[in-house]
Image (cartoon, rainbow, N blue to C red; front, side):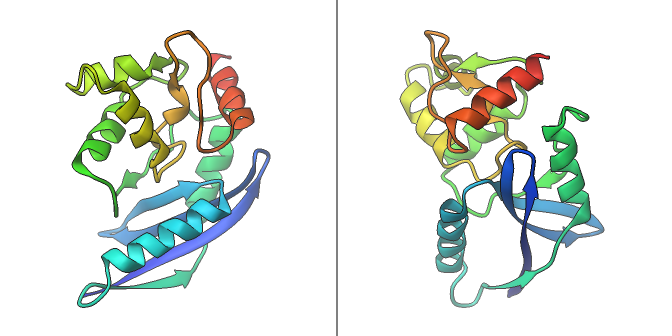
Amino acid sequence: MLAFINYSGFETSAGKFYYLWRKKNGDTIVLYLGNNKSDFKRFLDKISKVYRGTRQVTLVHKKSSDIEKAVTAYLEGKVRKIDFKLEFLIGTEFQKRIWKKLISVPYGKTITYRELSELTGYKKAWRAAGSALNGNPLMLAIPCHRVIRSDGTTGKYKGGDKLKRFLINMEKG
């Protein structure tokens, strides 16, 4: 099976973002969205290893104006959600469970790592939940910036501490 996946990057007011996407049955499906070029390259390496052999992936440089407009509108506070279908090309079942649960955290709200792990049925796995967020391939669409430490501090963020504080403050209005 040969899969074609589109990739691109674009500048925003919050810096450069990189993304992978494809079309399926007329829908835009986002496979990766992040702001770190090194993470993007590592993600591409991972998927090329996972899909080696009979399930080859061909990357095509192609922009999606829909994705770029949605991310820009989100970062400007004009929309509350990056509203595309999402697909996980990598990740353990635990990570995917954490990521899917995080989508339900409302715009403008924050939860702790402990609360997130409890919501997913893993009462004592808050550190593992934090590690799962570090592997989140869909920044903004899976809003890991909404997860904070129990003491109220922001904690780590793959997109950078400055961006996490910006996003939390923007969402709280």
